[in-house]
Image 1 (cartoon, rainbow, N blue to C red):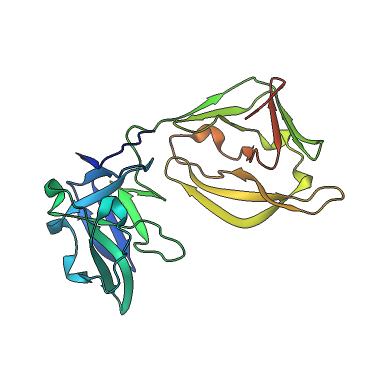
Image 2 (image 1 turned 180 degrees about the horizontal axis):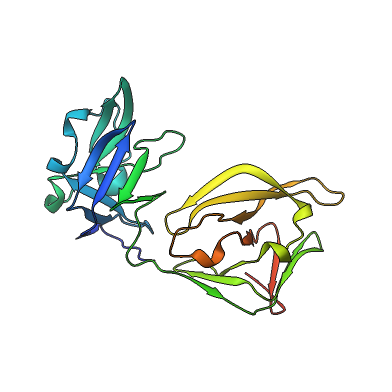
Length: 248
């Protein structure tokens, strides 16, 4: 995971498109991958000619705190009768003067609804070419406890090694006490693994603990090994690997 103390950028050869309400707002085969100071993830900037600049107007209330590496030029997006404030901006670097960048998935408001690299939809953030995810089948002994009770135990986990993150162990559902968990409506997205479903712990006597387990039921092609497997948030569950508590 690369983190810089100054603005950095490099060209990308990926074909990037973004849409809102069925309208293509960005269609670029010459994007620039930009890394802002202090941030662990990149974003894209696009040539003016590859952006629907006719849908952009100078921002009515630009942010005063100089986000995005001190950017001061912001645009509101006007589309289908709606206005999305501060949806796009220009970076202050002279070499990026002819480029425009967009917010991705700003909460609670969506800026551009769908992003694509080539023909694949991507989620949350651009995929970082320096970020790696390896899902490896393992024979480590993994035991999971919640409130002192064993809720999962496996000798056949999938260990996921991801740049800048602790190792996560995904367990087959057959090795998890599924009756102790209840599906929730929570969905989260990862640009490298896909959409995750979540489950809450019901417990035997105590109150439910929300969203302690997650699983990718239809993971992205890079990590097929974790399909349907379950992983546990270590702040809610004790994950013990070969007798050693993970994160301890």
